[in-house]
Image (cartoon, rainbow, N blue to C red; front, side, top):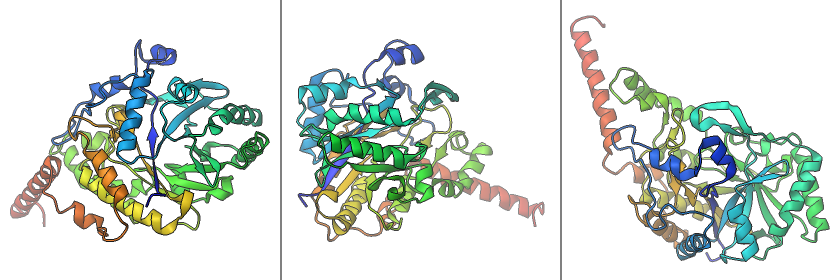
Length: 409
């Protein structure tokens, strides 16, 4: 399985920049969100605090080298750095610029254009736009020219010799086919040949079920946990929301979307394969309540064992479906600390998620568990699940009492 490559999404938010100083206060980095998080119900794992690497600053080359060393040790082929471009303006670019200019660390990488507006959604003001995305052919041209030096780097990840470039919200491009045609033409002019363009399948794009070729892309990649019918599954959790409204569960179940990790992983594994190339993606966990006061997505119940089983299954499917350079599997993420999805060691799990990654990537495709639900629900219920069933029993007792009093028939 030496040709399978695991790529982890990488967030460059962990260093101060003038824009964040202005918007959120001097010295702001993602760590401020991380450290202010609190548990919202019994068994809720918050805050996520870094262990081995500490509260690092990505301006330090020693930090970036330590990250790469950990990634190599546990089987991660490379990082997919988020890239921020707003009509010629780049932001949070320093860590990657220094990786590119210094040649270090010696770890493969690719880029994902995070082409969303920046708003104050962290404090509930989605309508307050801080940086706006707008699109035009001349901007597409300037953008691709700025990327060519990265594509030319020998460390840049390629598929069939073509630089791999991802777009996070391809559906937001007003004319994606025109944009991708411009990019491909300019890459060819620069001597790079063609590009291997991948759209990220998340949110609206996950539900649209549009082939990447229709938008000018070569393939798509899942974005766990949001590449599944999350709205439908949310309604299956109506009982916890009802119990919260009755005061029998914490209000977090009303103010946020609390969905079991097992449910999310199982639903993603059950998705049928499309007729086009779609790379699989797994997440070790997800909880963005550190960033959001309300409407956070919280997936309790994640463990390294469950994550390892999910990754094993997707590795097996990838090896079966694809060959050579297209044997890619993505992990969300290496260091999204404020969204609770990180492979980097924390004080709760240490290196357990890294160990799980290594074991899953080194495992043979045969002999894998095929019933994710059976594996993950065999464990004793956690504190949150105990509270759920305790409250449910209380409701049943109240209903029975009403029946005895003939208030209900």
